[in-house]
Length: 55
Image (cartoon, rainbow, N blue to C red; front, side, top):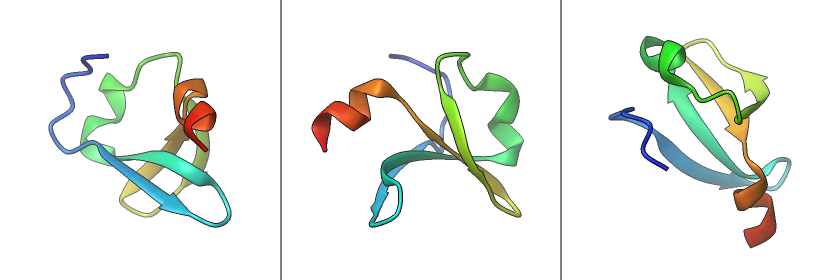
């Protein structure tokens, strides 16, 4: 999926598994299908079903 977000990062940790991290500067470009999991000071973390299938 093309989002137009230049600094989108896919990361992994033991708590959330795979997730997408997007800085606050690009919050307005986040697709409606992304599910917010965590809010950080400078970013938001989201999950999508496709990433959960990879785990």
